[in-house]
Picture 1 (cartoon, rainbow, N blue to C red):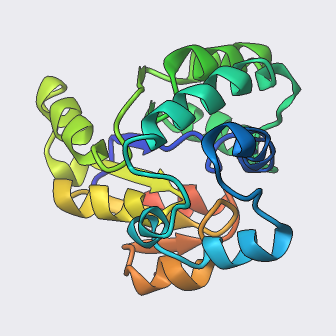
Picture 2: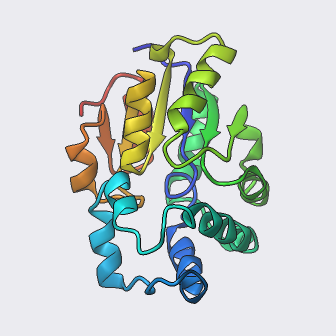
Length: 214
């Protein structure tokens, strides 16, 4: 594996946004007719795959895109108050220093991502940001990215925190690093058989250098 480009998910992988996203989502429970998610329920939901989670949603599939748009709008107001995942800043700077191209493919909106990166002084590290993908459309964006940059699948690796990230990477035939600090619990991530599973950002460099085992 000769990796040239490392592609990151944003929410829960680079930025510690999930607590804020849950709180914002709960604030819209009355508008969209669902019960606020408790801490106990959240733990259970984190043990489900992305597709299972969608099936168990308390609101119709038709309303979900509208809820997501509302949540992202409110999230924009909180971006300056959020922090990178512990150890991620150092990891990103080291990867860049080693000569890797870094990018982001996310279902969050680009304005939110750019705002966060600028405030945290991380914006100069990334060569590209693809945003606004559908919940299960990341593989299409990955395929487009590979084609535009004339890359073979084995020259890129994706880093994400949800089962849908694993699914997208497999569809695009690129390697996937699943991280244990994001939304989905390690147990459900491992069930989806990522190429690598890590628990600390510093382990990303070991993976791309070929020094880590799954």
